[in-house]
Image (cartoon, rainbow, N blue to C red):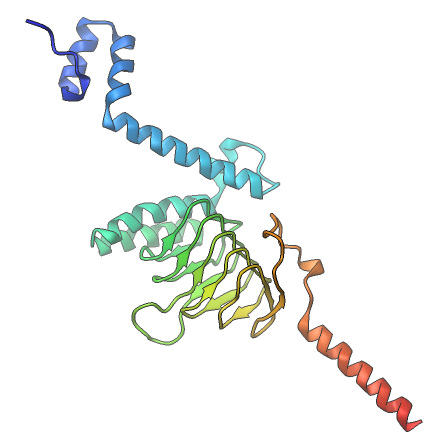
Length: 250
């Protein structure tokens, strides 16, 4: 009778027996090649590799893979959220909150397990970042320290913002309400955004106003030095107007 060779049908005890009686390395490779568990491990490895790559590309202070894996609290918060979000979707809400609050205590970053987050989110520094329950974040977004993606009032249902792809939110900014920040847009540091921001725009101030439109794809750094200041512009216009009136008076 032909011996069964399909490792997909084997359990852990079959594997142990094969290793003891056969060629351990060859059998282990064959088993892992076909095993769903090993495919899962490979998937996790690929995801973690992509996460590390994202951090290295966006943070010039990242010097090594080990540093990113062990010392970047923003990355740890994202990993914890992936687990808590899975539990939340399976209606294990208490366990989900337990993980998210544990991550908050360790990292200083609070992400509600109900929030939906796309690929390659980078949270730089991270302290004080808050992401609410119905928040939706697209792919390749960047959040700096002190960012709040929050709701307004006690409304139920969708009450937190949606960030498109390639959105960057500067340090200390607040985005409050159930509206969208379009793909490729930037929110300047300490801005308070209370209404929709179109695609490829830059919003500045309190309340935030759009000061740039249709930029080329969002850059890898938030250049605060060259972002227009609408308050300073208004003051400059007022000073110019005062000079005109003084000249007329003379």
